[in-house]
Image (cartoon, rainbow, N blue to C red; front, side, top):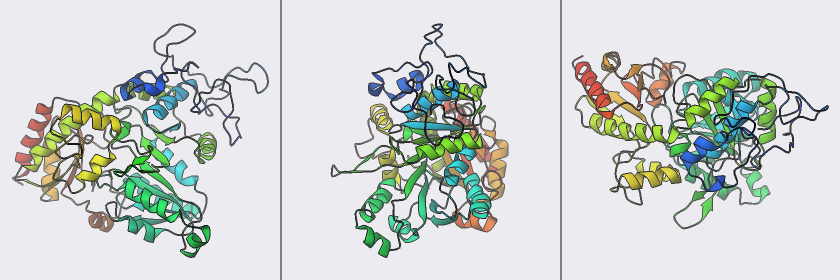
Length: 469
C-alpha cells in the first residue's frame, strides 16, 4: 500500500501510486507486466533498476522518516510505520504473484496478519473455520479474540459438505476461514462448493435471507494459502466451472511469508492480499498502521529476494515430496501417507481443481502421464504427513533423521520434520487433537530442495530403525 496520513482510513491518492494501489521500488510501471509469467513477476515486480543510480537491485530503505516538500506534500512516504519503500516493493511483488490480487499488506508475522484480519471483523462477530487450523490460529481465535472481543467460531469439517457451512451460518457471520490444505492433516476444503453455496444463498431476496437467519450480507471467504504458496494455488481468481460458468474466488488470502515465499528460514513475516475493489482495504490498511506490527525494511528485502526463486523452489520441493510420498506409502512400517498429489488420495480431484493455472501447465508439461482431469500422481507442494504405528516410533523416526532437521516451521530450502502433537499443535487440548486425528504417531515433513536421493535415503534409514521400537 502507499503511505497513509497517520490517522487516515483511506489510502493517500499519491501520483506515484500504481493502478493496483502500490508503489513499486522506484516509481516505474512496466506496462507489459500483465503478460508476464509467474517467475518473471516474482523477479521483476518491485525490483526495477533504480532511475537514480542504475542499481539493478533497489537499495534497502532504512530511514524511519521522509522529507516533505511542503506540509502534506510527500512522495508517498511519511513515516516508516505507515509505509516504507522496501515494504512497498515487497507488497507490490506479492500482489502481482498472488494471481487475482491487487493489494498486499505486509505484517511482522503471519500471526500478526491473522490477528489484524480477525480484529477487522469488529466485536461480537461470528466466523466459520475449518477445524484443522494451524495451532496459532486456533490460539488467537479461542484464547484471545473470544475473550477480548467476543468472537464466536463455528467449526466445520474441512472435507465435509458445503451444507455444513450452511448449517453454521448465523446472522452475525462475517467470515469463512479456510486453510487449503490444512495443517497438519492436509485436508482439502472445496472452495468451489463453498462459493457455489454462497452464490445460491445470496441470489435470493433480502427478506428470504433474513427469514432463514443468514447474515444480511455475504460473508467473506478467506484462504490461508501458506502451504501451497502463490505458485501452486491462486484462490483469488474466479472459479471456472466445467460447464463454462464462473463463481467468485476467495475474498482474502493470508500468508505466513516466513514459510515458502521467503523460503530460507531467516525472516518472520506475514501478509494479507486482497483482490481489486476490496471493501476491506481501508480498514486493514488503517489497522496495519495503527497496530504498528509491520516488518523491518531489511526483512522485506530478504523476503522479496527469497520470492524471486519461489517457482524454482516449489517445483523442486513438490517433485521430491511426491517421490518421498510414493516411497513411504509402499513401506510396511508406515500406516498411511497424506499427500493430496497422490492419485490414491481421496481428495485428489479437489487438489487438481485447486491448482493455479501456471502450476497446472508445468505439471502437464513435465509429467505427460497426468491427464487434463488430473488423473495420475502430481506434485502438490512440499508437505508430506506420515502416520506411523505409535508415538514411540514417530519420535524415534524424528530422532534418527540426519538430512531432515527436527524443527518447527516449514517451507525453507532445508528439509524439516516435526511432531505436531507435541510441537506445533501442542496448544490445542489433547482430547481435541485426538478427535481431529493429530495423534502421537503423526509426523509432518517439509521437503526442501536437497537432492531427492539423499532425502529418500535419510527417511528410509530412519524408518527402518524406528520400526524396531
